[in-house]
Image (cartoon, rainbow, N blue to C red):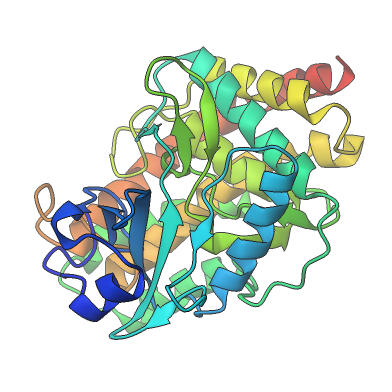
Length: 349
């Protein structure tokens, strides 16, 4: 369900980007940035977005630098299309930008191991391509995967929101999250690399007619972080065909195996053994961390969007998300030894 469903791009925005007003079609997905498909007056297929205010306008400088680097390496990628006056973005009732539109399809969940293999391959290609980019990010995402901080936030929410109408249901759910966090095995420390920052399955674009992954999209989250956390976030999304919005999540081992094999095939020795071996624990940690974030927002109802067609409140939606991530974490934990063995095997292949 899209953010701000009643928002209409102002005429000044359309003029600045030379867009044909009659061509606008609202995208039905995307919780962060309201998005429209549009054509320029010259006939170019574009994407128009109003950037979520949680991101600084200068995030577009980061996107421009990374996508130029990707394009120079021969990778498919959306590119920012400047305004008629050459600016990367326009500030008018928000921050607006346009990007080239790549013909493809987004998936809310994977259906086959071959799709998982393709996802692993495209993310490895992305990581390798930007490994030599020298860029200082303007939009700094400090602590995005600071698990200890997210757990503190949950504990604080339990104290601050005892009067919440659903507190009796959320408190035992929060205790399950905290117990799962206390039992997490440590993720070995490793170097930071340039990563996408939010590689959930809906941020990958696939071909219409086969299982090829074309590129990564929604690049506002570009950052430096350990690859184990990037891939941990990816795998907890890719290996759950129920999606993170459902309470009935499950971990599909075949998707994990295929994704790891696909990444290894394209990475070609890009990661160190220490980075590579940390990936399964990264997946478990990020899954529990996300459960904590959802649980805190079930009380605070201030960050994650919610599907009004399926849930009566943001709290109800986030409670379902917590249940799902806990089930997913249990599935990963039950197979952790096997996942680590599979990862070691792929690294040595």
